[in-house]
Length: 173
Image 1: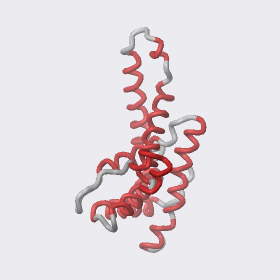
Image 2: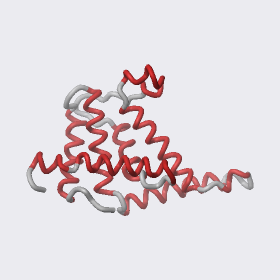
Image 3: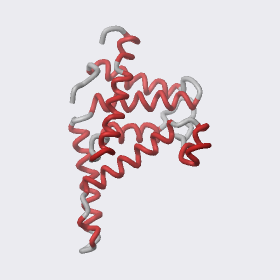
């Protein structure tokens, strides 16, 4: 993986995401979108390919393999655990994407566009938003095919989008 931010810039971006989320800077609809994209970019840059990333991927794959072995000779027991992890990541990606859509999009996209991260009180972290961001940042490179290209491409795009921000905020990092 080629990094777009220095380690210091990555840490600054994650801290700024926490600040935006925790302090509740701005209206809810804007704050959640900014914090979410900052979290994904920072966590992707900082932890992708790390031991935490590998542990997360392996743990989820092991859990799915265990569940498949419980089928005892059923046809579904032969399914690929890695492919199933990829499908789960894509479902989380779809949820995150739907939460980022404006409410006005529901006229064309229906109830899908009405999904939103639950609100959080001022001076608190939106844990569902953070959980989805962590899952996408750490597992976005697991899916195969065009789904994998979409999830990995989103992470890379967000990292590139936010890469200049820490330097603009605190100087050359």
